[in-house]
Image: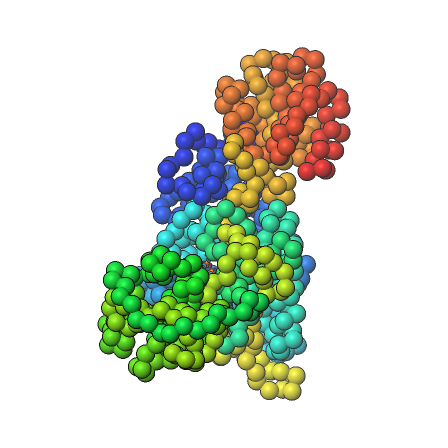
Amino acid sequence: MKQSKVFIPTLREVPAEAEAISHQLLLKAGMIKQNTAGVYSYLPLATKAIHKISDIIREEMERIDAVEVVMPVLQHAELWQESGRWEAYGAELMRLRDRNQREFALGPTHEEVITSLVRDELRSYKQLPLTLFQIQTKFRDEKRPRFGLLRGREFIMKDAYSFHTDEESLMKTYQDMYDAYKRIFKRVGLNVRPVVADSGAIGGNYTHEFHALSAIGEDTIVYSENSDYAANIEKAEVVYTPPDTEKKAPKALEKIATPNIKTAKDLAELLELPLEHTTKSMVFKVDGDFALILIRGHHEINDVKLKDYFQTDNIEMATEDEIRNLLGAAPGSLGPVTDRDIKVYADYSVQDLVNIPVGANEDGYHFVNAVIDRDFTVDGFGDFRFILEGEPLADGSGPAKFAEGIEVGQVFVLGEKYSEAMNATVLNNQGREQNLTMGCYGIGVSRTLSAVIEQHHDDNGIIWPKSVTPYDLHLITVNPKKEAQSELSDKLYATLQEKYDVLYDDRQERAGVKFNDADLIGLPIRIVVGKNAEDGIVEVKRRDTGESEEINVDTLTDYIADLYEQL
Ligand code: ATP
Ligand code: MG
């Protein structure tokens, strides 16, 4: 395609609010244009890259017998009422009314639509397993749309749903999807880790998220460089190892005045102790009952782990009033030494401490030298905290490394959640009606495009992996007004196009502008037709390494073929 005919409005400056590098580069390279918050037009280069990513996804889906469909974006509210999500989905669901005032949603995901589709069409276990997928625009009224295509309110997703009558078949498809996702992300050039994730609901739901490791991202991923271990920090288990040093001798409990001491850090400074020798006491309401959780001063409490430990989603911090009523002091002076009716739970690592400083449950006072089982009892020890960088990992490897992760995909065992609510049954092999069991599997297609750029760029622009590059080659005429140059370029364009998708910069622009744009757009191979055109010599440059060579046009096709192979 001739660049003079393509719409690539590159920018020299980017709007200051674009924080993420992929957002900046998508804007600068003229690939997207914002329409309103979280809503973008995909310009020609982005459209081509999205097509390439989508084609890879299609190939890998078909390889595991998933079949493509297109379902409606416009979804009747009744379907969502049936599943109970019309209310539960909350403000993220884009809602609208038709001319007859009937309520609709713009699909953020398609469990309801697909369950209603198959319940009317699937009759027998003989038609199963069945996996359907689509690639489509989704709508979510995100609270904070940001980072360009990484978190949009309108975005492209591949969503797939599988139907089974038994667990074994479901787990096979889950595994097939998991493997297909690994292939897809590898093929698009992403360094991705599948991570054990929080399913958000108690009840043994099984799920993995696929995270592209990057400098920005909204999740912290804990991973190992020595194994495949990776987990969302919310889930990364802490391995408790008792210290091999002998415990100190207990000292007498003593109350001291600690005016203005509110944090573990303040207390550590006052007592001239390392922070890890102090503790923090926090009060939560667990299913309506108060629980005091004790962790060490240098650790942070992890609510997902609390929910797992207590096996409930119903956990919240107690309010200041509740705490004062219960313990008689404000947060900052709380502790487990009390005769009030409250259960005490402590992180595993607290059991290593002797002579522990704790709040005295009296404003402005602490105890020093509290001892477990002498001054207070612990109703249960558990893993209540976030893992720290450098600690050992649950698979025996380590040290724990942290990276930011962009969730590009997720595979999820749904079980009978939707089939039960929406009455989707089939006849099983004993001739009895049975709920379908389901899995669902998403990939953020537009988010993947951004993630590829997050992982493949330099200071000058994008560096496309060849699998998803909008065009394969960038052919640039330095000065189209020079006949030798434009003639040779036209000729090369004609031959190269037979094998490659070529972007031909035939524009009447200064060479500097063209080269800057080429770096920014970042196609893998650049062919520059300049002043040596008269002698049949062109320059060929790799975008990734920056290496360039002068090549005689007679050997150019072979040279490019080799180079392209090496990419
Ligand atoms: P997140 O936790 O990032 O909000 P999610 O877990 O709610 O995402 P899913 O329902 O699992 O998202 O959707 C499947 C995939 O769609 C995600 O893995 C992600 O890649 C993509 N996705 C979700 N929300 C957005 C969004 N607002 N913008 C772009 N892509 C998105
Ligand atoms: Mg998800």
